[in-house]
Picture 1 (cartoon, helix red, strand yellow):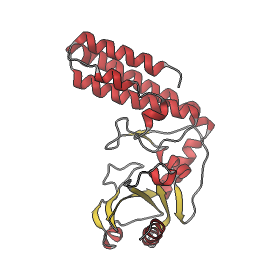
Picture 2 (cartoon, rainbow, N blue to C red):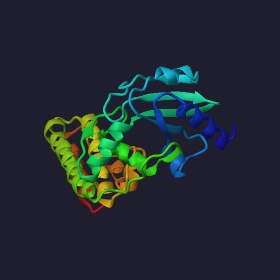
Picture 3 (cartoon, rainbow, N blue to C red):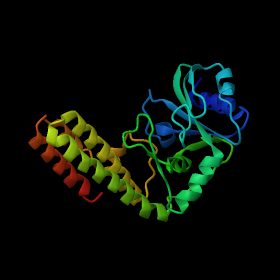
Length: 249
């Protein structure tokens, strides 16, 4: 199948699952930044109960999680599949949850959740960001702009988390010469700060892959590369990171 035939094939099969109301294409392929070997990221939006057994029964090779299998919360599960020789991810999106988080974001309210493979975790408005940037293949979904109340409320939350991460690293890790722990704290605080920078700009974030680049914070690489397991070096690195993160975005 060519790419369009592949999209139609997958979208039709996902849209036919019980409870599914819409199907989208996300990630780099929706935004035109993909490479030839990039994954295909799909999301199915369902209303009411959704049974992953229906997706499993389609017969595509791979792993299909249960609802909540990826930790619950707004990012509540999905599948890693191979379809027609292509790597494809399918994410579950509960429309009731998505509509609630959209209403919350429009009021400047959100919460933080841990999520595997995300150093800084995710904001609950991630599912709103997906509405804004993903390509709708089947069904209909809202296309929100970036709410002004969220531009005001999100940056200070993210910057406070980054400041506390570095404060703890200075007292608990640097003083003991724990280079690995400091490196982890620097990476986490960099991602948190990048969320703050992009929220202040009113730019949506759906994952961390290009987050530091977009926020102009790739300079943290040099700071991490220079780490050594001695308190003086680690304390200096944290100070350098604080100066980098405080620079205007």
